[in-house]
Amino acid sequence: MGGQQRVFKAKIKATETLAKVFRAMEMIAASRINAARKRAEMADPYTRALTQAVAAVAVHGHVDHSLTRPRTDTRRVAVLAIASDRGLAGAYSATILRETERLLQELHDEGKEPVLFTSGRRARQYFSFRRVPIANSWEGSSDNPNQEMIDQIAHTLLDAFLNPDPTQGVAEVHLVFTRFETMVRQVPEIRKMLPLTVVDTPEADDSRNQGGDRSSASDDIYPEYEFIPDASTVLNELLPLYVRNRITHAMLQSAASELASRQQAMHTATDNANDLITNYTRLANAARQAEITQEITEIVSGADALAPQA
Image (tube, rainbow, N blue to C red; front, side):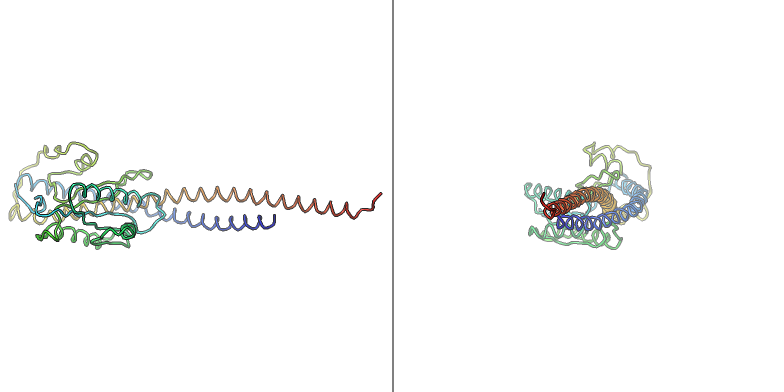
């Protein structure tokens, strides 16, 4: 009995340590989620203005651009999977990895050749273990993406799409990321980023992702503009910014989703640890009572054995 009591006490101590770790991680995630949400929300006005500017040039300039022109010289398709660097975030990374595998299989079934890019250590480790070739990977700041990493990703994907060599370039670019909706709801998304549909708005983006009308944005009426030096030059400057902005939006949404998922997972883990501590404490008390009862029984039995016989 004494051995059982020591076992339960050791389990209680270990679980209490884990509960403190889970609680600390929950508080860290909670303190950072607000900053991540604000960062994503602060980018919305710039996204809206940039989208309207690109749409205005495309509507009134009638310019054909390499970023909006479908490629037919290659079957290679780039896929960027945005996952987390660390675990303990519930099903956040697992959901993205599952959606990425599904997209890769769909592209294979369509006769295309997926070229995988990953953001986040979890994605790289997962696909490397399954021997899926990875063209390039980025990691180290999935829950707080810095502009340098975002620029590197945008530059790599743009170069791949604009590369005239069919053996090195890609015909399409897809993003697999998580859109933050609420603290308890984060939705995985697959978005085709290139070739661009420039006559677009943020609202049209949302409706497209939810299966809405794809042509609603083209019905908008834009004022007349005069482009200096010309519409083609303006579009050449705006479209790379537009691509970088879409990648930035996906990275910020994923960062906020990761922190929200981690906070929720750590809150659940803390509650489970406290339940385990309660159960182990009850079992330890029962073992202690059984040990005391056994000791009393042994004392009484020994006293009866030593008592003089009548």
